[in-house]
Length: 478
Image (cartoon, rainbow, N blue to C red; front, side, top):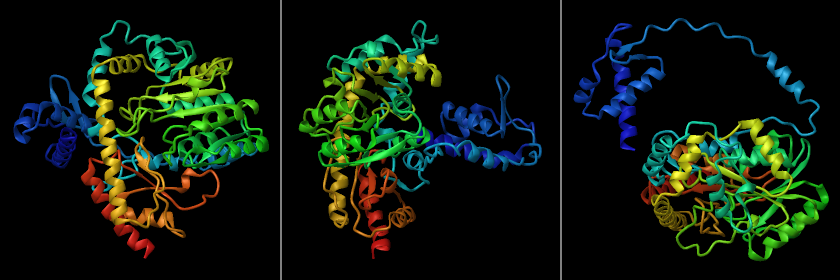
């Protein structure tokens, strides 16, 4: 983190000093900048690259860096108002509007302003990411024979085999496709399983990104309530009978946002209900590798106990590594596999081979199990710090379930709380939250917030974030 900070600080300093030079004027040499600012040559190189990307500096190999020529006046803005008519007319005949609302996804992707504690993050803090191991894996991967050539459309055989083994059961490498992250895999799955205008069953509450995928594809999400033991089978059966939906999307392990694990007695019921309805179960196994140290043995993926091809399984390396390490897998059995493969090829061709090779290098290295153990211990410590701080400072927030995996809590707010008002007050107090409303495809039964403990720097920041949240609650709740 220090290196990143130094790059930004140096770039800002150089940006302020550019007026000293005439357009085309030469900046001090890299060696002079290293000596003056007492930073590394890498920091200087990255800061100059940042200014070059902004069009402020031009770098010439062997000659140095020069202030860019003055920019010409921007061209007059065009008139794009015609698009409002064109886009509206395009969707006029849709059974379900296909407009895309990405706000629920952007909440967990957008970096908060400086000084704001990130309780809304959806990924590991950089201090928890295996940056050195990923860098080493990518370096080794780039030197592999054929690493920069075209991979097999389905993915590298060795990587498909690794994902098949991690799923377990009778799943084979031939039933696995490598995809570019879980979001891409879910998009492919829903497009393969449901035609536009069809209903699709979803857990309630559920991941907003999945709701956005469904609506963008012209599908109609139908909620099925979740309790502490996962989706309720009797309501799932009712929903299939009422809608004739072709698929049910679920997260049986550490569900987002509740953290629930599908109970052993419900697992076979869910598969039986879907099979009798002639429907698929899309299993989003997104945080299996973010188990907490005290979790105990995990249940197998639903796909491992599914001989009949009911389950389309999605698993990913992204949550346990970095938001930019977008390598995941789709696993399916039967004719649906070819449809999934065809859609994937049409949409994205394939996942870049260097990234697939790097994934193989990473998961095969001694650093990988060490990383998972370290993250497991740290997530437990952070979860305990957050639950303890909430109990001490915010007892009015109900927390009926404390998960043993994943990276967030799902507190229920007091009845009548305005989620939007609390979110705004929290941001003013210096902490970013995720409101609960985007997690529901219909009217929510109560107000919630999702609090992430993975994207912050450590337990000290968690304690400070909860203190700031107390300030916001005092303002909103009275």
